[in-house]
Amino acid sequence: MTGTELVIDTVTLTAGAHRLVEDVSLTACPGEVIGLVGPNGSGKSSLLRAVYRVLRPATGQVSVDGTDAWSLPVRRLAQTVAAVVQESDADFDLTVREVVAMGRTPHKRLLDGDTPEDADLIETALAVVDATDLAHRPFDRLSGGERQRALVARALAQQPSLLVMDEPTNHLDIRHQLDVLGTLRRLPATVLVALHDLNLAAYYCDRLYVLCDGTVTASGPPAEVLTPQLLARVYGVTSEVTLHPRTGAPQVTFLPGEPRTPTSCG
Amino acid sequence: MTAPVTDAATGRAVRPGKQDTRRAGPAGLTITLVVLAVLLVVSATAGLAIGSVQVPPGQVWGIVTHALGADWAEPDWSRARETIVLDVRAPRVLLGAVAGAGLAVVGTALQALIRNPLAEPYLLGVSSGASLGAVVVIVFGVTLFGPASLSAAAFAGALGALLLVYATARTGGRITSARLVLSGVAIAAVLTAVLDLLLLTTDRGNEARAVLAWTLGGLGGVNWGTLWLPSAALLLGTAVLMVQARNLNLLLAGEEAATTMGLDVARFRARMFVLLSLVTGILVAACGPIGFVGLMLPHTVRLAVGGDHRRVLPTAALGGAVFLIWADIAARVVAAPMEIPVGVLTALCGGPFFLWLMRRDARRSTDRGGS
Image 1: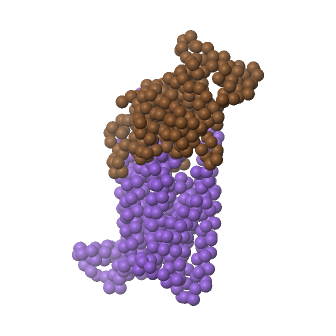
Image 2: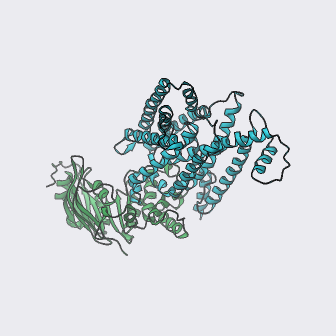
């Protein structure tokens, strides 16, 4: 199993009368790493919420391996789809290991105990994010970056075939950013990840979807999508894009001195 | 290979008795539970022995084992003492244990479900709702469900109050401590006012006085015939919560995160609210609203065994039982021959505890904001 197919089919998401996302379609083939980029408030998080079943689409459908995600019981979906969500707090005294162990829950029946396999998966997940040393620390005393790594480990312990991540590199120092994203690439799973950093997105993702004001304004391989014209249109900034001689990935250099341009998503 | 050593060392420094949950953990938990179980037996013995008539512990054991059919002690005690121990104190001690355990367990679960460390049936007005329900039955003499009417009405009142507090405190999917406590206080105030109004205007004056004493929370006046219902509620509640312990853990990660790990949060919370109201209602019907047990016990226990509900629930249950037995002993002794309602004593300890918890919480969120 190398991942699940995800199809988002003309999904519109609303909050009251406000449209968060309009007619968005997105496909992720098994094993692909799909990046979701776009300015603040462009609807990235909302779209991810629809995939991990928190925000029900007003119209359209999210299907995982051909099945409507919203027709499955929550637990069944959680056996396939794991998520690292943005804001996560814990006021209670759980250790990092206990937080990571939560990821095993969807695979457990009510009276099941923890097995040696669970323990192995938890240890492995901790090792992958370089958090073995944190295992017995209280979760709520960790720094932002340590916490983020623990949450990634929790998602890994869930053994998803589709992993959804909202800014997983938030708070991380550059080394751990590279580690976490490198891990995503090696995972036998499909990954849908919202990222702020365009250069990281360009290097680690197979394809990008650019969201702007709730709609997909461009999509495709990073080298095709990330152009100065698009960045000017979506972010209103001036930039230069080159293919990096060593990585081969598009490299965006922003030119803050240059005049800003008005944004237009159309 | 220095890393694991340092890790174990810091683990020990940060939280004693809480290293690898796979190995040292269960053993540590077992020891804690065994110690608490022994304490419970000792406390129960004290509860049976101490009072206006002092019965030596050896004799208490003689009387109890004799009643249970084991005749290893020569019956050298008077009938009066036997009556005091078996018919007056034993049900009272048992109700204390049951109520203490039940309130601690309800508080533990409520804190996870509402995702707020200050949640507790008394502070949230849930106990007031239960009291009002029970008083309505007493004042208007409604006996729709026969002898269980009191408990049924208390259950309905508890559930109503809980839903009301939850609905008013929740905005934008989050409940802040301030709003939770404020709406709890406000709703408790209204419910208590209605309750007082009912009692003051009823023409059953004598009953009203008895009920007024009951609303302060006390374990007196219980007998063997009424003990089964609270006990059954405790066993049912604890069993269900233990089975759901993993799901309660998930809620600690946040509602969205819990959903991504397979928990249907809304449905789960609704079911648990009904269960917790049932347990609270039955306990309040039996011994009046006793505050703060559901606040002090879970938090104290978490300091010792961590936050995993599979550990917190059984520990809090045993701890709550021990605590309330001693609180009741104190209630009988401190102003003897007068008896103080045990709810007054738990509030006396619980109020300062609440303030400490509030300050700790504030400190933690400032820390987090700074990081």
